Image (cartoon, rainbow, N blue to C red; front, top):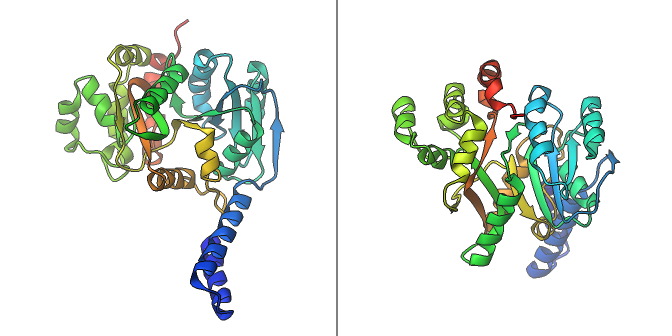
Length: 326
């Protein structure tokens, strides 16, 4: 819609013979205002239990309840008490999530429209004191010291001065970029290449993205999960910069960057997955903000969409090795 209005405005201004520079400035300003209006407008309910922390964790959840005993329990155990946590449901209200949030003292925000960027923008806007924003999807398995090590890595890169970070991510097992570093860290790269016939970085079009058997194999190498996470955490600090679009299921970014881009981009249509990721990565490129991956911090991604069926069938087999130890 914004692009269509952009064209219509150009036509209208051309009819009045406005100077090109003025026409361009007016159209750009109106386009920005429209996008920002869309990014924060929508019916929602916010159950506020925030503490006014400088750090905020937002968790997109509501559609994979079978994973909550595994993934949300890790959030409850590993996220520091001084981090505000807000569970987000896009396009639905979940009574189990509301109860879980109440039990743990977390906030809960849900929107009427199923627009994942909108619910995230609203949550960040509500937490006015939060300067650091952690974002997790409900199918992400975090490990011990997740928040601390992700922030430490971000600050290291920022202080070093070679890059200005856009967002920071852990080493994920199911990820088109970081699966290679993960396999190299456990000396399983040659085995993967021999089994699946490829070994390349890519955001999609590779077996680490679409193949259920590849996802199952990568998870097999990720277990026992906490032991693998501890092994990777014991390695020296190292980071890398992703040269292409990166999945944003587990990231950390600063409020000032979020404000600079006018919030995450919201689609007019409901159920459009990936628009937040697409535009966030584009904004990083346009603003010379680098996508940073911390190599000695491990997290698990359950699956990409094409792999979900195979992984759901596989889950009972690996469930015990994903559970937290008492």
